[in-house]
Length: 299
View 1 (cartoon, helix red, strand yellow):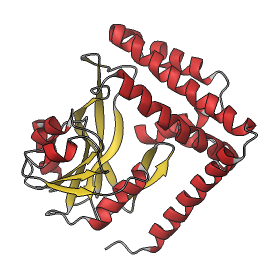
View 2 (cartoon, helix red, strand yellow; view 1 turned 135 degrees about the vertical axis):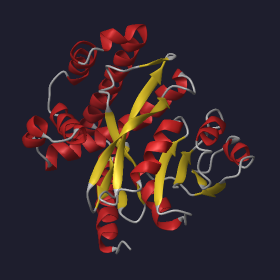
View 3 (cartoon, one colour; view 1 turned 45 degrees about the horizontal axis):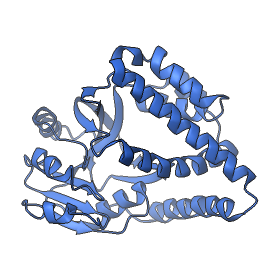
View 4 (cartoon, one colour; view 1 turned 90 degrees about the vertical axis):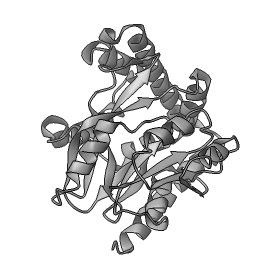
């Protein structure tokens, strides 16, 4: 058996369905970032623990819960409220526990949008670290999202999980990605200044994760990035095979890239140094966070 974390913030629409899908585990912990809606009240109707902690970033929130919230089991799975656990995925996780060779597993999502699975233009299978031993993994920030740090060998699960990425409506999606684009703009400037493209991983990476992350680093340096992303997703990845939903998805992602590009320009040309100073502080906090975590022993 393993424990399941569910991360929430104003998830009253999705939280019940998420908890019910995770009910195959007898240790479910809802980690809430002080929701202002009915998320906590709904969660408390189920046999779960609810822990609240102020949100700083995705990486910090995950690392905090792994380090500070006791669990019934050594192995944990991370769900977000608009995602679901499936019986087949749960069964594969239970079977994989018997293999002590790995300390964590990447799991691929199935993006659900406009009532269908967007299979082609989402780079499926697109893997994320979701199931692991909680004493062997922690997370850092990268743009608006997080990246895992593992101190031993990892592997991949075959089963996938559904991600209802627009379950709370398009307005919520746009509001969220407007916020995300600010973090991505800051990360873009930092990466352009301090890092280079890992051509070895891009061309010869042994896993989808290595190749995808190297491709992202390359994309930061390309001109006409929003247009190129749309063409790449719609034609090269086959988004045209995903129907009307595929066209809409590719267009939304290109718009998101355009927002990032505009905010990069805004930071570079801002006469008010507040935005630039905020970017510097953003990176300094992240570097200090990584440094402090590296100094802490992992039991």
